[in-house]
Image (cartoon, rainbow over all chains, first blue to last red; front, side):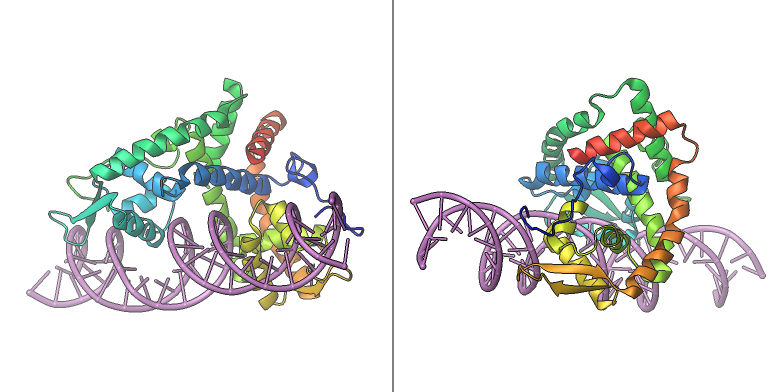
Length: 154
Length: 154
DNA sequence: AACAACATATCAGAGCTCTGATAATATGGG
DNA sequence: CCCATATTATCAGAGCTCTGATATGTTGTT
């Protein structure tokens, strides 16, 4: 922009309504967007998206869970998870097999390739995670964590 | 789900890794998703999406700004904002006119219909915003706000 | 055994978000 | 004046997310 004569003064991140005086909902949206963007960049060269990373992490913790299980864990709809799962399957990071007893359920597991890719992702995300807590006291971090959980609960 | 014999124990929101012991990045993602979902529901019957509400709010505060200006304010790409603007224009909530001097720039403003719709949205969102701060002391709220701004700054 | 209720997976359509590429306009330096 | 640089808008393609609808399979009741 720069030199327009009729220019309106727009605030920077952290200033005015974009700062600590703004709406909590707006600040939450802004912070989550910025962090998602950082994750995007950190994982881009691995060809993994943040949602894919999240789903792979859940599959590592709970092998054999279903599409519907993941949806409940991630607070997403089964249809949304279905898209992510389809992309992971096409990339060879996961495999699905019908449940031994319940024909309709497809159990999902990471492949060997998926596990090694997840490890590479974790190394890249580690630093970002550490930065999130940097500069906060233990008490402050506890306040933030408690707030985030309460908001997630609805 | 329910009664499967080989069932794995999956945590509820707020329990285990989904609770205060989890990764801050995961908690942030979960909280932002839950709040976005609440907004979706609150605005659904008005036919407005949360991003559209955010853009309309910015246009009310800074009439005549451009697509690129909005992108900077919202921490989004110009292409993303372009989609939202196109949908708002099709709905008749905004109008665009070439800048008097700079031919390439399109200045955007709310229409009368857009302004009244924005007002209706605000009434619905007001309560959600209040709930976000509910139960926190002033000090705690200040900690949360400071953290959100720092994360947004990157 | 038959039926109702529920869970699971999936298809279709819409909107949001990104990266990459292209064209038009504005600004500043030679 | 001409060209390099930067800004703006837009097109194309991919992935994520939702709502609504459909088909299949399981469970519990009658």
